[in-house]
Amino acid sequence: MIALRGVTKTYRLNGRAKCMAARITTTFPTGASVAILGRNGAGKSSLLRMIAGTMRPDSGRIITTGRLSWPVGFAGSFHPDLTGAQNTRFLARVYGVDTDALCAFVADFAELGAHFALPVRSYSSGMRSRLAFGISMGIPFDTYLIDEITAVGDAGFRQKSEALLAQRLAQSGAIIVSHAMGQVARLCRHGAVLENGQLTYYPEIGDAIRHHEALMEPAA
Image (tube, rainbow, N blue to C red; front, top):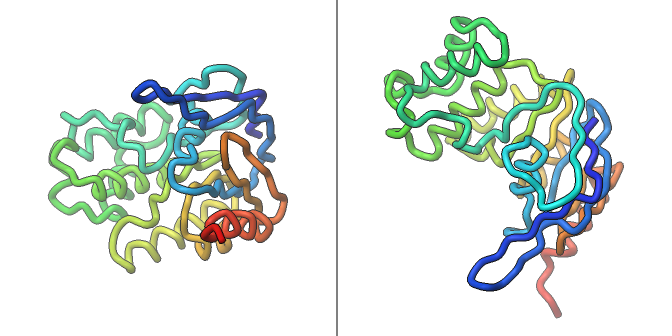
């Protein structure tokens, strides 16, 4: 279970305030796969980071049960001076999983080749994302936090990533931020739309997609 209770977050830039979350109160059920939808800049990734605990809300509480992944696609999980393999081993020890097994899984899945033995600071953003996705899929989490990660790579890698994520979601929950409506329709059962700091939760993903697509229609 992930519960938001009066969560508020406001950014200030050049003297202007933008509210990303305005006293949001909602509950994501245990084991649910939920898509967070909204226009660019609505605050979806910020909301995901607050749920993960890597960003603090200005006010309110976030209550979580079970083991959550970090926000996949967020490079802040890695030490830039360590190699991909070293970062993988470090996270394996943090989460109590076999280091050799996780390294073997990530090396095979992420398709980094010789770069797996190079410092992460030398990686492109796509390589960092593939590393993050591979590590997160190799560690058993109760809830996976996914931020557009399966958009990274060629068509074959995207297909492989989505297939693996679908396998994980057969036993775990997820909160997925994505602009790919076909993808969220395949992977998610529930949805929520973030707009003007308000989060509207829908038990049926189709209703969330229709709300989002209505927001994206050009004004008459």
